[in-house]
Length: 222
Image (cartoon, rainbow, N blue to C red; front, side, top):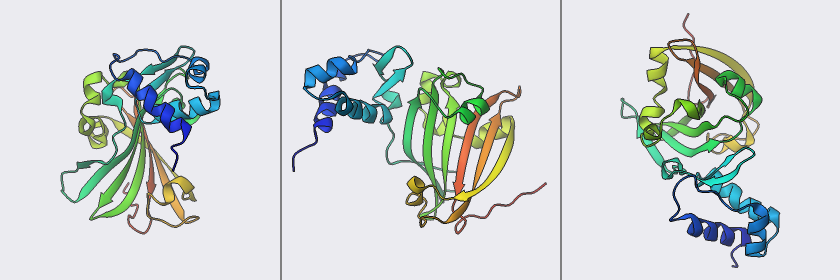
């Protein structure tokens, strides 16, 4: 089977940036289109995949740049919790140039601010009980922090040191998460949105938790 052109372009771009230092600029889509003899749409698809996988990042109005290796997508990474039964399996990890308006509002970030986004499964005894989308403003994360995902994603630590605000939203399981939650399409779930605040009251992280109602019960104690 012939390899799609965008995948060939993706491999060529990866090879071209391999020895470049972090934050080196990528040529424009117009120049890449001419270089590879492909449409800008095809080039954009290759670049989008590299952005999603953490090899590149975009800076608004400035262009696309090589990302630090610590920001590469962390596929199949598992962080084991203290009880040795629950695993946090990271399936997506990147730095986003833009996030939805409600998320930037909860984080107190501006449109041009970079945001760390992580999607992870919560697995207990080999069953997926929930899925989390975690958002943290990039300015709140050091380069050294990026090399220690377990430390960054210890939400309990932040909650113990600060405070939280939670909102509960009944909904149908999102189509793109149904398989990851081991659920059937169109099944109802409850999503919990959590704003985690630092000691000074400023927002530190925003977490969307999609719970599998057949695997995890929600208990509220006042």
